[in-house]
Length: 337
Ligand code: GTR
Image 1 (cartoon, rainbow, N blue to C red):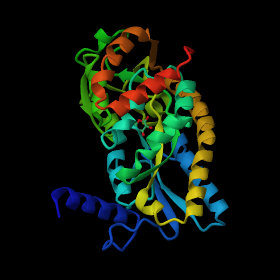
Image 2 (tube, protein in one colour):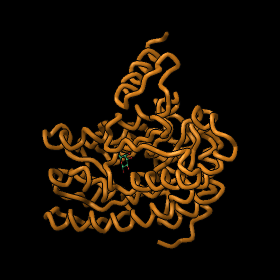
Image 3 (tube, rainbow, N blue to C red):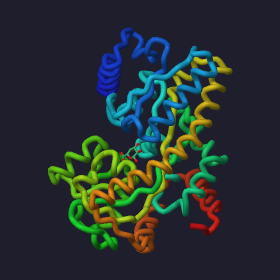
């Protein structure tokens, strides 16, 4: 057994232990009783978590309770990178993750994670609800994942403990946390800041202890992770509209009949409009909490940020298929905001 596979089985064993499953001889059994398992780094009540719970309810309803889902929220099974790995090995049936941990698994996912790519939420939704979205979801299958649907994730902006960011020069030398993805690292470096890749659950403490000066995220994550309690400046660069992805382990998928696979696909697709509704409400709620706590929120002229960050597009894509997809995404722009 290689060092990597030994480490993976140790982690799988840990997860199986956490959710009380035996049968490790054949890897981690993916079922908890009859229920499928799913993980999310966010807590109960967060739109991604609630959308997947709704997905599970639809599943139960349509199979008269034969299929159901148990949600492990709040990162209790580990960070996204780890739980994703476990999912590919069948230790978890489902997972909801951000695009970032998929960037190092499937290069095509990088295209829709480029900063300042989508001109609006509508542009992102049109892209992901159409053939480009399907192509990206399908590209995950050779990696042991069945891509089921995309969820909204709003737009990400920078927050920090030092002061308002108004132009790229204000970011020079700031230590900013990014998710573990090369794309994020070069994004932050292109603005002259120091990128510190780190799992989400370490951000609060790292901000509080001064290990990092800031991070970047959407309103709901900034609020729900309580990062706003320590990072009191939120600068609306809105540099990234990158979606969330809901995936299933291919190992679990292959055990389903064709008609159950169809039920899974449809229930996932139907959870999307529900998630979008929850998302829009959550953004407003989070804004209110953050602003009323006295965080200094400042508008930013996006132009110089876009100029610095789009310069990295070219060197971030390394194959013709990605470049072709980028052209197709850009062709769906309408010039609207
Ligand atoms: C959030 C996203 C999470 C996670 C997080 C992060 O917006 O919903 O899945 O990726 O960002 O920054 O790590």
